[in-house]
Length: 367
Image (cartoon, rainbow, N blue to C red; front, side, top):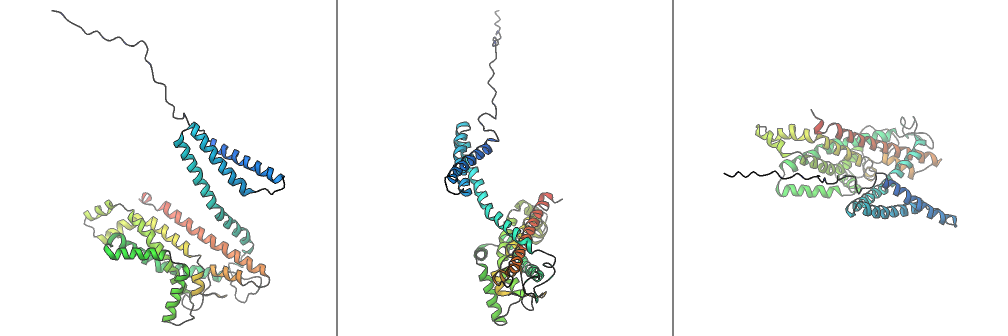
């Protein structure tokens, strides 16, 4: 009997290992885009410096434009040679987006700097504690305008927030068919109407109901509410649509009625986004001038009643102080800039509140 044994195959004398693949191969260093940007701006500055030395003026705008264009070319060519076309395209698009962001920030920073530079001179204790009653020339303050802005905006929020929130709940939870589509279309139309049209609408309505020539704070609040409602509806609608349907279905499976599901599940889940949208809508209308000039008018005295007499607001105060300058004109201009600065600070505070609400009251933070 012959036994055939399979001899083990001889092991290779040396195992050839594949070369290690390094993730960082073919990538530019993290500092290279900044270095290329600095070099591009330096080259552009040198070119315009030579032009300025020849008799022309040095152009900062031209230096920035040429430097950025040169940077786009350099980063594109360098990244293509080292990283490939795909990464080069990504870097060029990133540079374009960053440039667009910088361009958008220029007017914002310019407005903030100008208002801060010119408005600080008009700020004082008297500015926040006195009105313009019996004040001609220097002195006086904007207390009546600040209180008017607070009262009118608060009344507009009380009117518009319930209407806008209930409308968004209907569109998301109940609305179907032609009625829902019609409401959505009207909300879209209202979003784009000019603010002066809202003021004229409220003025015409009160002129028919009470009589022509009437101007009260309530009319200003209603005109601002007309502008706020579509913003509240749109922002609340988007937040409610982000609530997962699984949460609604789980509540329905436990036998909870739909209205209670909306009240206890849907609204708490989306509350952070709703509050953020409402706050931003208030910040959007608080600086409106045209509708308040038509509906609430202007006055130099304190007025705490929305239904009795004209009421001043900060935007109208800025307009009247700048357009009706007396002697000395510098006092009127300083008051206008100071009121503009206060209005910007109020809007900034509202935006910060919206950000804080979105951060600390998001669903993930709720225990």
